[in-house]
Length: 344
Image (cartoon, rainbow, N blue to C red; front, side, top):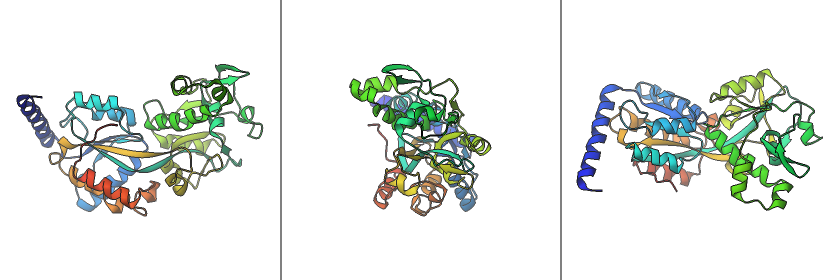
C-alpha cells in the first residue's frame, strides 16, 4: 500500500473517531447472549466504581454482533462485540473491507453448553452425544437409510429414556451458541453413529449432512434471549433447554443440568473439558475507538482485571470458568496493549 493510501486511511479513521467522541459518551457493546451477562456485570461494576455512564450492552447474538461491529468505525458503530466462538475469517474480512482494520481479541474464559430441565422433572437425565443428535437432527439413519427424523419421544431413541415428547429449546442460527452446539454436540454425536462410521464418511459429508437441526417441532428456536428459555423450562417440566452454563448456574434453585456421557456440567468439568461441550468465550475491541470514545480503555482495563477474570472473581461467581493464571496474564498483556488480532 502506498504512503498516500496509508495517510488517507489514517485520516479517515481519525475523522470518524473524532466524530464518535463528539457524538456520544457511552461505550456501546453488542454480541453474544452468552457473553452478555458477563459484560453486563463488568459494565455495572465499572459504572459503580468510576461514576462514568454505564456502557450500553445489547444481546444481538454472536453472528449479528459481528455484522454490526464490522460495519465501520465512528459513533454509529459499536466499540466491542462479545462472541461465544472465535471470529470467522469471513467476518474479519468484512471488518477489513469497512475500515475496521485494528482489532484486539480477548478470550475471557470457558463456558459449557448446558442442557437443562426443571427441577420438577424427576428423571435422572444422562444423554450421550449420539442420543442428542438423534433427538435433534433434521435427518438420521433408520434401517440403513438416511431419512427425515421420525423420533417424537425420547423412549423411541432409547427405551431407558422417558416416554415423553422431545421438546428442546435452543438458539437460532445467528447465535454463536448454535454454531458451537452444532460443532461440539451434533457433529460429534453424528460421528459416533454406526451408519457414519461404517460408511467412512469424511468431515465434508458430516458438515453437509449432520449440521441441520430439525424444524418439525421437537426443536424450537427460542431467539437470542436465553432468559426466555429459562422461564419456559420453569413453566414446563418436560421441556429441555440449551444455553450457556451461566444461565444454569444462576438458576440452580429451579433448574438442573443434563449429564452428558455421565459427566455433570459444573465449573470443574468445564475447566478440564471432561464435560464434552465446553468452549471458550471472547470479546473483540475496536482499537480505533480507544482513546477516543470516553472511558473505553478504562472499561477494557476493568474487564481485564484480576477482580473480574481470576478464579474467585466476580465473573466466576456468575459461572465463567477462569483461565489459568499464566494464560490470564498473557491475555491481559495483549489486550491492554492493544495487540492486533489476526484470524488463524
